[in-house]
Image 1 (cartoon, rainbow, N blue to C red):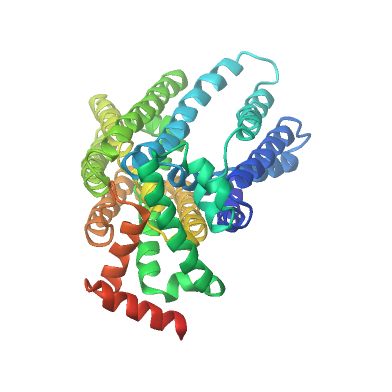
Image 2 (tube, helix red, strand yellow; image 1 turned 180 degrees about the vertical axis):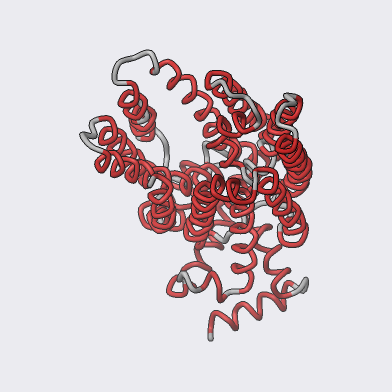
Amino acid sequence: MALVGAIIGAAAGGWINDYYGRKKATLIADVVFALGSVVMAAAPDPYVLILGRFLVGLGVGVASVTAPVYIAEASPSEIRGGLVSTNVLMITGGQFISYLVNLAFTEVPGTWRWMLGAAGIPAVIQFSLMFFMPESPRWLFMKGDRSKAIDVLSKIYNFSRLEDEIDYLTAQLEQECQNRSKVRYLDVFKTKEIRLAFLAGAGLQAFQQFTGINTVMYYSPTIVQMAGFESNQLALLLSLIVAGMNAAGTILGIYLIDHVGRTKLALTSLSGVFVSLLILSGAFFAESSNSTNALYGWIAVIGLALYIGSFSPGMGPVPWTVNSEIYPEAYRGMCGGMAATVNWISNLIVAQSFLSVAEAAGTGATFLILAGIAAVAFVFVIVYVPETQGLTFEEVEKIWKERAWGRDGQDAERLLEQGNES
């Protein structure tokens, strides 16, 4: 139900971002999340607990759309990737900390109520601190609040760079005023360059989940036990190590994403994911035929560690970073919300189907299927995802116009204008 809430929250999050702004969207998410945590902690029966999970999911869904866009719009292009990736680090680091917090609460009376109620504390802290944060300068500019936007931008850029940003935003505002009545959800699929951008963004979000990351995170204790480690304590300890590696890998990704580039990092990451899934598959196939050999269990754990080490620096942050920078200003909230919805739906499908598929086809076959998906994802990145490292939002828009209409910029503009007039 938390994932269902996240799907709905992400779907609504794009509209909330565009209408109320990035700052208010974050505040709304914090309120809903904190409320859900209180409901869970005080739940008198399972139905109220499920309601609390749904509310928490709504907050997570809205936040998952808002944070990358808010960070990207307040970041200089040369460090934008690293700063958006920091958001992913906060998620993976939060997962690791939650393991430690929950471990501590196992010794406290009312164990699960404390675990679930404590989730509201970060939301309350963020809600309080957001009052000291500015609104996204780009959103302010697009809403006509030029003076506030320039005030925020002046804290980010030096004077010469500030003038360039203001000129670009002024041009964007004029274009948006002409197209304001045209901005609709259907435009995402009707307008060729936006359709191509959404295909790349939503495809990355889907492949992030279908290559199995949250399966590994949700079910890592189960996977470790399936590998032959029967002790619950040992399984949880190894899962804690997996979560720690996930956070550490994300730190590496923050550096690499603005030095190596988005597509190269994604391709390298998927290569490692593919190999590690083959190792996992082979270990489980071998273990099923010779269950007395403990070596295969350790090979599975090594494959699990290699998977996290490959995934977390690349396919962890890259989809969120790319989605925060590939859409035109008028569609950024809308398309970002739609792509995040694809992510959460894919997350739900994989999480709900993994154990069933593993039981029906076998764990080895299941990981082999995920390896096949990783290979398809590799080809997808090569074909559909452009490199956006160090590019301004304007330069990224030009890439999509060239892909949609050819490299002749004047012909592209002419065709776009004809499309807008028709």
